[in-house]
Image (cartoon, rainbow, N blue to C red):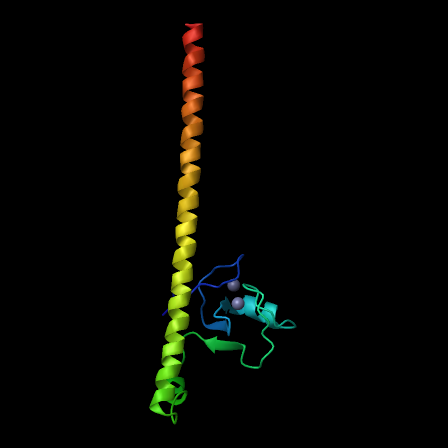
Length: 136
Ligand SMILES: [Zn+2]
Ligand SMILES: [Zn+2]
């Protein structure tokens, strides 16, 4: 199953697959960008947050194994399990929200451009027909 989350690197924006990098500032990056960006650098490429703490950047498996799912939260108290789940859900909704805002922005820009083009071609058409009227 593919994740719905997209890499937050401006030039990339591809869907994350297999492995992804998660930052404490709630950003996510594909494996290629994460490996490259975080190799010698602990700054978020999306928001420039300093990520120098050990848990500020983690690399995750997007579709973890059954074994991992059985083990990762086992032994923790219910309230801790629920808190972890709720924080992870917040991360998810933040990402989905950001993506929707971005898509709306792209949509609005495209509409604006289409309106400009339409206006431009209407002018061309009226100028051309005016010229044709002069000739004939
Ligand atoms: Zn990427
Ligand atoms: Zn960030």
